[in-house]
Every structure is written in structure tokens, then in C-alpha cells.
Picture: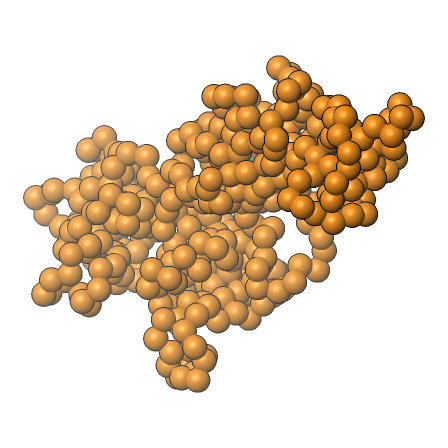
Length: 370
Ligand SMILES: *[C@@H]1O[C@H](CO)[C@@H](O)[C@H](O)[C@H]1NC(C)=O
Ligand SMILES: *[C@@H]1O[C@H](CO)[C@@H](O)[C@H](O)[C@H]1NC(C)=O
């Protein structure tokens, strides 16, 4: 704390209350002063207009599955401190699945701790144990480094710096690079309750999409007139071209929401999210066309495995896989990925084309993953 022997001109006057909170009782000339009320009795005013700022140059960061990501967070004092204060840093988070932007959350979801650091000591929690550290590239750098990123690490992270007198925080969204795709059961449309949809996405090497992920997909042009579950338990679908039977002409383009549905009793399709694929997806060059059992075997003989729908979508979106040959996938569906539209390869937009689930004795190519 700087001791200033200087008359109090026109200033903010803070009264330091017990517990360290400040109350504003004056007005400002642009400087910050504080009367700490426990001076030496000689009317001295202690200059204590020091403000703690916690900032992040990026409000959101996106990264690939399995990679390392840095969530930036810096703190500084204004004006600069002559003697360092002892600070504590806390990173906490809200998982993406508990962030609902569609309706006011019924219950307040508490952020849970990721890491707490004080001086050289730190502690990480839960699923983050052993995977997180502070970057500390300079004294004010409290950026969080997360290693071996998992799809369920997405959400809103809060960086909070506490120094006993002051406390400030900033949030950074972590998004996973990837692709959203609609998915329905072999048995037909609207067969999944919430838990069935969760499992179906997992089987495709994917997770239920979050609202943010579906919203981004909609912004990028996803238009799908069948309602599907999202990770927050809501049921929605994305419409870019309003039309009858999809919410009608009169509704603006956007996400149509049925809100929260009963997780056990109600049945819909799913919106899955596939994060970047490790490895490669390829169309197997083979002398003949294959039925489903032969297709599974042919990938194994080639030292790989028949690809999942999630892997095919990720390879299409993130690696530009483009192939005008229909092929089997692990769920028994037939699809092919087109990034550059051309004649005889389906509609004029890029996309993963689907022929649904034909009888497994029919012969096609196959997509493998290695
Ligand atoms: C997140 O995923 C990992 C593996 O992918 C799993 O071990 C972990 O339990 C999951 N955490 C939560 C909170 O679902
Ligand atoms: C695929 O063909 C093989 C013979 O090459 C046959 O044994 C198998 O039953 C067929 N599978 C299906 C699902 O028709």
C-alpha cells in the first residue's frame, strides 16, 4: 500500500468495510483513492486505489479431441503494485451439457472446481486431475493448460483471482472442433428416449450435441426437419429454409425447440456431435462389392475397422473426405461424403449422403477407419 501525504482533492472515496469490501461514498475525477479509516490519526490518507483486473483476450477457444488447449487468463493491477500481493487463482467450470440458453434454468447450476493454485502449490480436481496446469509464461499469466482434451471437457470456464482485498474473474468458453449430425435408429424415426439417444451417439463415436454446437451447425447451414435430443435434455431441430411441417413459413429461420422433454417417456431422433477423428477414414479399394458381413471383414483384413457414422462425418467435415461411392458403415447404414458437389453425386450442397439402412445382403463398398 502506498502512503500518500497529499490532500484529498476531488476523488472517489472508498470506505473499507470489515471483510474487505469497499463502499463508494464519493465521486470520481478518474483516480481511485481509499480512506482506509485506520490511519495514524494525523489525517493522512492512504492511497489505495489499486484495482485488480482479470482479463482474457479470447472469450472462446476451440480445439480438437486429444490435443492440448490453453484457456487464456491474465491479471494485472492498475496502477502497478510496488510490492506483490499474495494471490490465489481458482479455475472452475460449468459443463456444456448444463448450460441451457433456451429457457431459464430451473435450478442454479453451481460451477465445480477444476484447479486451485496459490504460489507454487496447486491442486486439481475430478476428471481434471493430472491433466491441467497453469501456463505462467509471465507473472500475470494464469492461463489454464488442459492436456488430452476429452469431448466432455467443453463448457464455460471461469478464471478467478483473489488477493484477500479484491476479486475479479473472467470466463472462457471451450468448444470442441467437430461436426453435428442428425441420427436416427435402424428401426425408424423417433425411437430414442434421452438415454437411448445418448447411447446411439456413443456408438457412433460421438456425444449428444450441445445447444451451442447445434446452433453453430445451424449457422453453417444445417437444415433438418426432424426433432432430436440435445445434451441438455431439450428437443430441437435446425431450420434454415422455413416451410410447412417444419414450424411453418411464418417462423423465422432458427432452432425450433420443444423445450425439455421427458427423458424416459418421450421419443425422438438424436443430434450427435463428433469431435475430430484420430487416424484416417478411407474408402476401401476392393475388387468386388460387398455385403455387410464381408465389408466388416474386408476392413479387418486391411488392418483397420469399419468406420462409424461419427468418424465419417468428422473425416468429411474436418479432413475434406470426398468420395462418390456408397459404402457400408458400422451401424449397417450406407453413406458417402461429398465436399465438392458434382453431377450424379446427390444434391448441389456438400454433405454426407445417406441411403438409410438397406438389407445387409445387398452389395456396396465400405468405409474403414485406421
Ligand atoms: C468424460 O469422458 C471420459 C472419457 O472419454 C470419462 O472417463 C469421464 O468419466 C467423462 N466425464 C464425465 C463427467 O462424464
Ligand atoms: C455375405 O456373403 C457371405 C458369402 O460371401 C455369406 O456367407 C454371408 O451370410 C452374407 N451376409 C449377409 C448379411 O448376407
